[in-house]
Image (tube, rainbow, N blue to C red; front, side, top):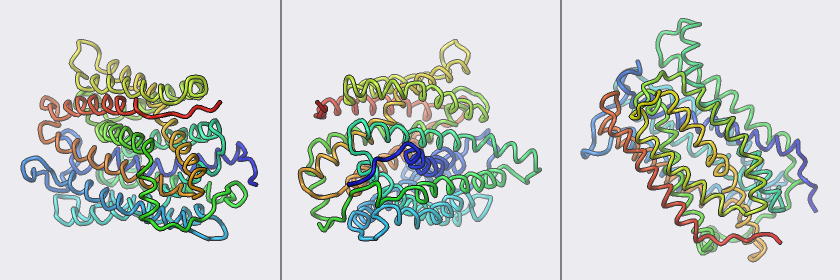
Length: 446
């Protein structure tokens, strides 16, 4: 019999997601912008921008390759965690050892060997990205596997997923401040160039992320609050059982489409601001604050509606709404309306579906896992999250690769066709995700 998971521990759990979110969103927000900068960015070219086979560029291939390696690693760390017989727990000990390498490799991603175009920078970026993806995965897979173990009831899962989402959104908000902080540091401390200012900023944020990731490791006694037990099934059997769950597969396919779309937003934010809206980079921070504040207003609404009408209908509505937001990105800057008003309106409206899509998928997956554990008498929480994150990472790979590929067809003011086409792609993908999720069978508690 486990002890109820108290409110203070729920907050501690959310800090872990906030730390991981800072790291992963630093990669999402800055990576492409740093290594494939628009002409007005003031950042020198660090790697070749030449199109390969006419459609791929170097940054697309590098990020795709790193994500693919990471995705295939997921089941191994999940199996290791699920089968762990560590007396301190199956999850927390793995998370603890993953923190330091995650921090180191995240910093190294933004520390090219040369501040000019060089093949050495390509090799270094591949090494650092793979190291970051593998080490950060070793934290987040066991971390997420704790959710169904710490939250036994349906509403408990929604509540803990809500706090987890709060942590994730705070992480996005902090990471989105990178350009503002780097500008301030460059001017205040007379740093030599823009890249050096970004590197100091990354160092500060990486340290903050590490502190956040350490909080749940120190604050949560896994043996006290989790009743998960090691399983003895091999990886092949665990994966076969997981992938034979029809409801889980429907969830994964819809999730896959959504994450391609949301990766386009995170990778393209600075392009939407500076190229389509023709505003300064600094506005990115206030845009993210707007999204955070608006989404927080809707968090209690999501919790209330999930209890009253179920999670499925909210997810479908949110995906359709987000599809319209993406079409708004395609036309951003074209209507005869103040461009700043346009982008704030888009971000404010986007916060509404994002609020539910940040909370409900993890709660839905936790319920799928709990049902499977009851029926099979096996605890495969990490394998489920590993399979989910395998497809998330493939989706993110496609998202970054497609976004980067489209940039070949225009990424500068006055030549922005490639950036705009990402809006159409996101629109179609979110619509497809909504249609697919209509077939999901939700089990409502009596």
